[in-house]
Length: 358
Image (cartoon, rainbow, N blue to C red; front, side, top):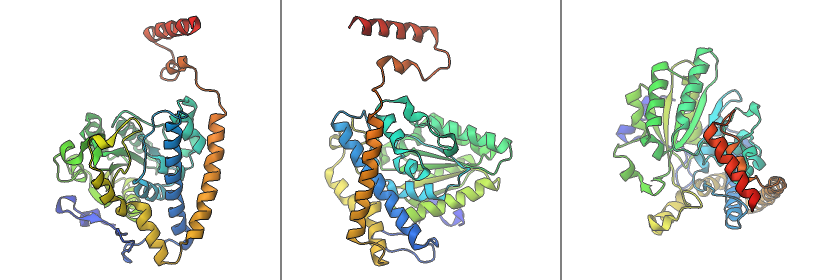
């Protein structure tokens, strides 16, 4: 795919699957029926895990959690394009990516339950721990990719973040270094229309976030972020560029966050409910279900069976996560530094003393 054909400043957006489930036959990837069903299964699994996490948080069994509803399409499509040797640098809303990549679900649950064990992932996955600070991990991705280039390896780094991160200094520093060094990294912006409580138009006045790539010597492309096929195609092409030594790419996936920013957020205070309802018919599961129906690859019975299988799998993971003892309060000091700095050592001692008195 030629990125030059999709100039974001000209309003050209890569879309394969429209909101009515109709696919462009010239762009549709040559997937067999099993692969087409697999895409739906991953998106459905992410949706059901997401809703389970919301319930667990409301019941006091999980801490603050960032819902992913509405963004499953671009996550599943991009993750399926990655190779086993590629690296994933996530932010904090990449649930669907983690599932496709093979991150054990109980690990994800543990992380949001406050267990640092949730950050201890199998090294073979090449999946970095969750990064909650907005945009800080883009620098990690750029540095990792620079190391890969230095060692002349045929690997790439894929970095996920939201539209709000593009206004952070870390983002600009990361793109500067990646562009100059032609680092094999793909910056994947999930523009879900809201930077926490700030709308896209108030967060940045640029006509396109993808167009920012030009200033750093890399192509930028806007895609329909509710279309898994568009995400797959853009990711595949960006990976080819990266592995060929052509440098980084900036992808902006236009999607929509249907839920709150996190469970600590009340979107009704800043977002019109009518806007959400207007966006629901365009969300990934709705359009992809229509796509499969047209090809006679979906039935209500099949989805019901999938839901049963997925719920059983989720239930097992929840049981495994909750079988571990709750983390002790003092553990908050234990996972940042190899050797605890004196001022934090004093604070930890004070906390332990206070807990002992109680």
